[in-house]
Structures are given as structure tokens and as C-alpha cells.
Image 1 (cartoon, rainbow, N blue to C red):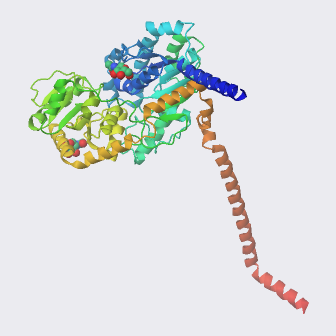
Image 2 (image 1 turned 120 degrees about the vertical axis):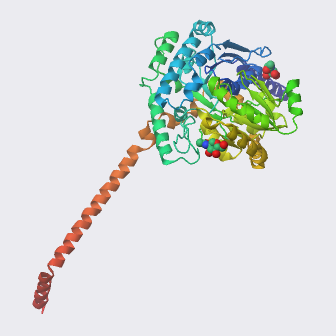
Image 3 (image 1 turned 180 degrees about the vertical axis):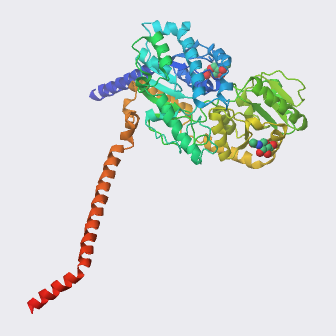
Length: 538
Ligand SMILES: *[C@@H]1O[C@H](CO)[C@@H](O)[C@H](O)[C@H]1NC(C)=O
Ligand SMILES: *[C@@H]1O[C@H](CO)[C@@H](O)[C@H](O)[C@H]1NC(C)=O
């Protein structure tokens, strides 16, 4: 009897602990905010929204690129896709890739664009409802960690927050998480460096200055976000604290890095790298015409896409060079562009969109010509496809230069895209097997994960929900002023002691020398004294 009731209570205990555990995690209300109107950013994060909602969490996601997937019943998307028009109107990609505009000018222009798009998001009906609904409660905010503004929603809903970065995150976010932020070992991803593994003296100098400048820009007292902060105050309340004190609340940071695409960096337990595979979907059948086009290719097929940001005249110039090349080559080409073109060779298929992941899976596809966006490179490597990189701006330049180091392709300068350079690059990558072999080797490394990236994100997301934050994972390094972190006081003290010792040694040597000198000059006196003393003694 005793035994029976014990096992019963044990059973009840187990039953309730499972119920409590499951219902606790199941009932979570999660707010996601992805304010950057760049498709690739969303592509990296959408699988997380889908997977969390499939696990029974209730998600509300403010997004410029809604999935509109009706089978995800637990996911409510607040569509702010009009932000895309602001990016187009303000010629985002053209400004970002214009080398005649200085870094600070670019920062100003892009910040104006962010101000306008943030205002649009905050004033949109869906977000207004969210802000003013007194009964709205969230257990967690997952917010894009690119700019600080949207972290304000963790203050509005008084909930823990996870930062997610579809790329590597910026150096100041790393610094705040307490991760080492070395300008030479890990130069900022948007800083164009020729060889990310071996910076020249000038690049090292610029990289240090870049880190300092961005840190000053993001400083609490900086004028740089003043206007942006006012916009948030206008919509969320006058007592909204400074951004810096908001992002101090970031419990975890999810970053899309992997040793294949970025220099290795030591990360604290509060920073989870999900690099490389998180957004890779299961294979889906290609549309019939595409499947036939690729199947019927006698030789290699090539996929060309410069992503979603390279448009207009930038794109047209390149296309006018590439089409004539293909009238001479025996390969088939899938070309992604919106630009209307004439005289299209028979072996070229043009569409404004391709199911990129499935195209890259096709065995006939042997080369990917890309602008070097991180997701594109990840998909290329995942499918062991070598690349030709034509980088334009931002992290693309360093991504492609890192790709050169890893050896799975070659680069063409964006100002040097000619028939000749394209043709010789294509023939080189297709005919020289070393690129294919490198791509295969990188692919094997990328896929060899302890836990798949997406599963890692799910586990850590629920961890933050279970513990209502992750203060215990905070690194002291993130909070410390630089003088303490770099031990300037301690080193100065040791320097001072060493100075004192050297000073003392100097004076001791000096006086001993003087003494010897004195004795030396008084040799005669000494001898006389000696004689006198000895004589006396005798
Ligand atoms: C919608 O989401 C489900 C679950 O993740 C997925 O299986 C399905 O392919 C998605 N549909 C579309 C059209 O992407
Ligand atoms: C331009 O491309 C050609 C190959 O066609 C190459 O020889 C040359 O070095 C390139 N120039 C620059 C500046 O990259």
C-alpha cells in the first residue's frame, strides 16, 4: 500500500511537472521585430518564426517581408512592407556602394532613411494597436540587432529580449555582450579589407579608428541617434530611456556566423552562433520548365543572381556584358533580374525570381555568380558550388575576400565586369577542379554541426523564456569601462613601480659610480693614507 501510494505520488509529480513544464513553454507570447527591408535578412530569421510557432508559441512578428504562410496558425504578421519603398526611393544600395560618398556622409544618409522607415513602422496601424493595447503581454522580444531603436519594445512590454543578427553583429553589440572586439583579428564586417586574415598597416589603423568611431556614434551621449530616439519617444512615451540602457537588457545575441565565412572569434555563452545552415530548407521540386532547362543542359549550368539590392543601372551595365559572353559559351545560364533585355541567347533563361536553394541543389549547376551576400554564400557552400563574387557594398566585400582565402572561387571587381573578365573567370572556375574540390571540403565542414543551427536557436529561445531572461550569462566585460577592462589603472601602477625601481637603480648606480670615481681620483691620497696607516702600524 505504502509502496503503491509512493509510486502514485511519484507519478502525479512527474505528470504535473511535465504539464507545468510544457504549458509554461507552450504559453509563451513572443514578439518579433525585423525592421530592415532586405529580403536576405528575413530569409535567415523566417525559419525561426516558423519553427517557434509550430512548437506552439504564439508569435507576433513586425516585418517588412511577411511570409504570409496560412498554415502557420500561431504566427501573426504585422506587415510593414511599405518600408521597402523608402529604401527604393532613397536609393539605398546605390548610396551604400558609392565609393565617392564618405563613411560619415553615408551614415547620415542611411540614418535619415532609418528615421523615415522607423516612423513608418511605429505609425502603422498594426504597430499602433500593439503599442496602445493595455492588455497586451509578451514573454520575450526577438529583435534584429542592427540598430538600437526597436529594442525600445522591450521597455514598452517590460520583457526580456534576444537580439538576432542575420549576419555577424556589429562590433559595439559584440562589445556589449562582452565578446573580445579586436580590430585586427575580427575587423568589422562592413569595413572593406583586402585580406581579412592579414590586414595591412593602413587597414589595421583604419579598423581601430572605425571601431572607435562606431563606438562613439552609439554612445549614450551621442548626437547621432538623437533624432531617432525622439521618434521612438513620440510613439512610445516621453520617459523612454536612452537606447544604451535598453540594449543592456539583451539577454542573448544570436549571430549568423561560422568559421567558413568569418574569422573565428571567442564568444561568451550569451552569444549563440547559428552560422550557415539555419535557413536551408528541405528540397522542393523545381518548376517543370526550370527542371527541364537544367536537365537538358549538355554541359554545366550557371546560376547568376546579385541578390535583391543591386538594381537599376548598376544591374543593367553588368547584364549588357554578360549576355554576349553566353552566346559564345556552351553553358546554360539562369539569370535573375527584373531588367527588361533584348537579344537574349537561347541558352539563357531570365526570371525575376528563382527558388535559389533548389536551383543550387541541381546536379548540373556548377557555378554561382553572386554579389557575396552571406546567405547566398552559405547556400553555395552548403551545396558545394564554387562561386564568382562581384561584391558591391557592406559585408559583401569582406565576405568575398574571405571566400578567396577559403579558395572556393574567384572575384571580379565590380568596376571591371567586362566580357573578357567574365569569360575568363567562368572558364577558370568551371575547368579548374580545385574550386569545386574546395567548395566540397567547405560544404562538409559546414554541415558537420554538433546541433543544427535552427535547433540551437529554438533551445536558447526557450531557455530565455523559462528563466525570464539570462542575467546570469551576462559577461562582466560588457559592462566594464575600457580603462577597467584593459586594466589601464593596474598597468599604470605597475608601470609606475617599474619607473621607481629604474629611477632608484639609476641613482644607486650614479652614486656608486661617483664614489668609485672619487676613490679613483684620490688614489694618491689613498696610497698616502695607506702608507701612513701601515707606517704607523709598524
Ligand atoms: C508554410 O509553413 C509550413 C511549416 O513550416 C511549411 O511546411 C510550408 O512549406 C510553408 N509553405 C510555404 C508556401 O512556404
Ligand atoms: C580586370 O580583369 C582582367 C581580366 O579580364 C584582369 O586581368 C585585371 O587585372 C582586372 N583588373 C582589375 C583592376 O581588377
